[in-house]
Length: 364
Ligand SMILES: Nc1ncnc2c1ncn2[C@@H]1O[C@H](COP(=O)(O)OP(=O)(O)O)[C@@H](O)[C@H]1O
Ligand SMILES: [Mg+2]
Image 1 (cartoon, protein in one colour):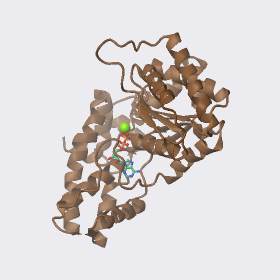
Image 2 (cartoon, protein in one colour):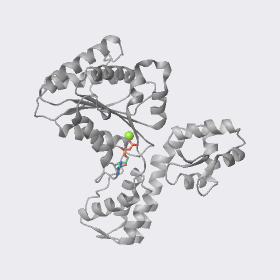
Image 3 (cartoon, rainbow, N blue to C red):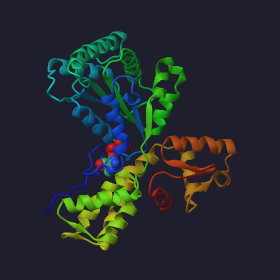
Image 4 (cartoon, rainbow, N blue to C red):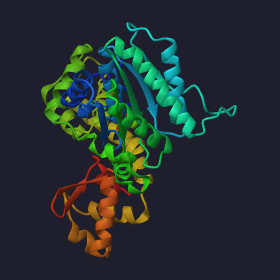
């Protein structure tokens, strides 16, 4: 039995990254172009399964290809302390020829290690990053920090933003790439109450990870299948690509289950039908249910009203169906947009942003 090359797992780097070359080229350019390049502060946002975590990993790989060091983090409590730890480890082992990547997961948790956020801690971390950069810059390299799961209300993230602002002002060889759900990122960028510190984040390069073109999906599916010793019929490849709707997680889910459905070397249209069915089921439990669990009853009411339509819905119709006032309907429209569950397709028209969500809602 040949190993299934597809990777339908959160955060797993896919066999072929579809449709993200231009974005990664920008990150790459930011690393190479020196301090002040806008891409040195980058934020990726998108719904679940659009490939945010993978983009952080790929950004880190680009940085390491230029000899940079990379720290991968997640915006949970204790992040700044963990970054400090990671910087220390890098300081100990700095070797210009060793491309390194660390995650600051070693402290916190049990044992009461002090991860409390204090001004001294932030000051210390800033100082230690500065020392690391002193060494790295002599070798013509720098430091990239990636932050996954951005939270609007993270004090650690706010401190890191402040540190970043200082490093940028000092023209250091430093870059930060962040990723989060649209709601978290827009809350973060909107949070005036948290002071001027974050205003510079609003000027960050912000990219929404949209669906990718199904033509590119088609080519990637065919390339992955053939590179792994199997073949796929022309109509089968077309059908499989269409079934992904260009949604990154589905590319892997469809690829994985179609591969499994074909018992021998050649993948047929019938295998695709079987595989797509299995992929859709997995999508329901892995992504759709999780996305819906975050929503309020009123949010869901709005979505159910949308599911009545076969295509994009008119806001006026949604108002009528739910009995919400125009203003109320607008509030829920914005909430669902921020959650990455719906998208605005034209003035006054919205549609589902996650594939098969309509069918999912109808089946309940
Ligand atoms: N551009 C892409 N092309 C193909 N597969 C992708 C792409 N981006 C992500 N994937 C796959 O989609 C799934 C979800 O990616 P992940 O980075 O975990 O998304 P997110 O962090 O946005 O929830 C993984 O299985 C990953 O391999
Ligand atoms: Mg992720």
